Image (cartoon, one colour):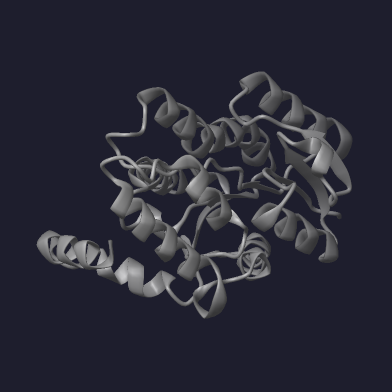
Length: 263
């Protein structure tokens, strides 16, 4: 029986690589994106704004009508807004949370009734090492991923008796081109200009060169989690992910000292 997966944010980067790997492994792939005109992978390519509950329900309904089941959903769509907490408006933060936290919640809620009925399925939420540790200059992004981690940990225990697995994937730096857009959203002439210049350098170092992972590296972990009968709760990806996660166990003052040295 052909397995079915929904991948959000599949027009580029990690989402595109993930949809492509699922395809190569014989899954029936529903690739979705708010920018659906740029979708280049997937057996089916659908428009999906994860902040729109009606669209989420429609996509899930389409998949069930056409295939009769949902074996996996990959909540990959994300909003990478950067900025100091003071300079990030509440409205911009709300939009970011709507994509990064409420979007996965919407899709999981829509898909879970069918997974519970099947007695099988996997929900994979794309987090980040910044869901485990917080860095200056990306406070609301970190907060949205921290929240996603908490939601996922609760969901994993809730649905386990129904045969459904729930997984977090936590990449470090990934070569997706995100670093190119950081400067565009930051005010380098304001009070946090020095922080932003440092942030720009750090992001570039993490997302290019030897410290960076490729989207394919992340996709490999995602598909492996979907295809195993007993996936781990968390999969870190990349050379910087484990050290960053480990740093989260240090005393807060030590962590703050390290952040000041970096930024």
